[in-house]
Amino acid sequence: MEGLSAPLTVTKLAPAIGAEVAGVDLGRPLDAPTVATLRRAWHDHAVLLVRGQSLSEADQVRYGEYFGVLGTALSESRLVPAHPSVMFVSNIRQDGKLIGRLPDGEMFFHSDQCYLAAPPAGTMLYGIELPSSGGNTLFASAYAAYDALPAAMKARLEGLQALNAYDLKNSATRRGAIPPDAPRHVHPVVRTHPATGRKALYVNRLMTQHIVGMDTAASEALLAELFDHQEQRPFVYEHVWRVGDVILWDNRCALHARTDFDPGERRLLRRITVLAEPAD
Image 1 (cartoon, one colour):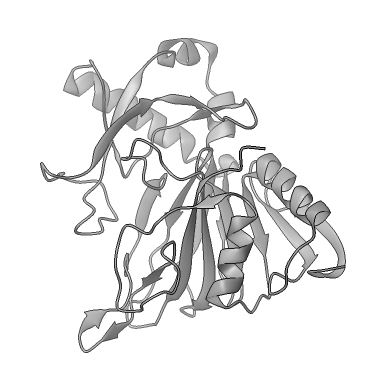
Image 2: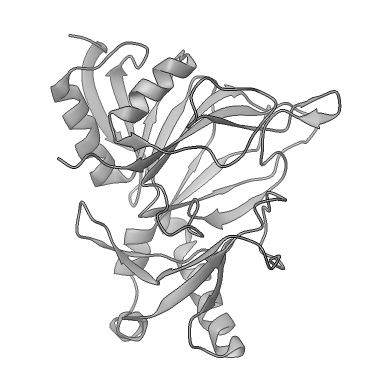
């Protein structure tokens, strides 16, 4: 069978989020039943890990396209991709200039491009060069965070909206002052996933700035409570990267963050985004 190296298995990575897929070779085309299984697993677990892959850019793009229409990368890098959806996350410098984006250090929990009117449905990273330790990616289930809220808090959040903004030019990794020209958009605090119908807590520590219509003190207090709640360890899977790992996460119901690492060690990952799922 195309793309299968052994019987395909899907194994949970953590109680709240994530699954590892084994028995699949992403360097070859996948047949329709395999793709259907992977898409179901993505909806069920929000984060899909496939280890031990050796992927060209075209291989990674093909895999991403099984999940939907690919988006266009918002930032340029010194590594020039062949496909407009591809960008590189890296701290490597050539002639003193970064070859990718989001280079060093810890990065707060966030949902990719929630400062846009239509954030991507998913994001994929492929590990190419990695530091000896650190640079782990943490994934938090926005489903589990919402489900665990007290009924009174769920009622309080009903109908609320929040402004999300990001200092894109400086590739900010921590919450801070936002330039007046930074991209921004208002989204519901509680989002319903279009494919699963499940509710997710759609705020995040890096990019959510304030609750619309609420005074600053009350907004900050509520957001701080929600951020602390959604980042609790029972809702989180921490991924320790290996070269050849491919992770695809559902940006509509999973937050992610990065742990610190030695900036003197090289880190290079190739990223694509899935803008929207197929209409079928």
